[in-house]
Structures are given as structure tokens and as C-alpha cells.
Length: 47
Image (cartoon, rainbow, N blue to C red; front, side, top):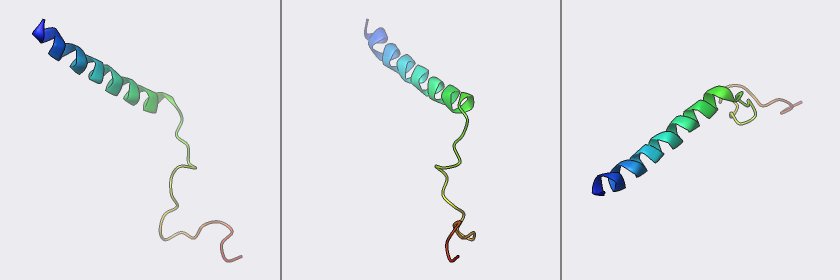
């Protein structure tokens, strides 16, 4: 019984981590979340 109390939370954590990785691979990446590079001015600035 004590072994189950240790193993079940570890297995659940592993499942959550694997599902997170699976979601990252499955869903397309949004470019809007990425910040602009430091050397490139933002569009519309200074015009």
C-alpha cells in the first residue's frame, strides 16, 4: 500500500508531462507570443 502511495502520484505527474509535450507537438505555434528580436524595429515604429 505504501508503494502505491508513492507510485501513483509519480505516474500521474509523468502522464501530465507527456500530455503537455504531446499538446506542444500537436498544436500549431503562434507567432504572436514571440517577442520581436532586439535588433529589428517593430513594424510601424518611426514611420
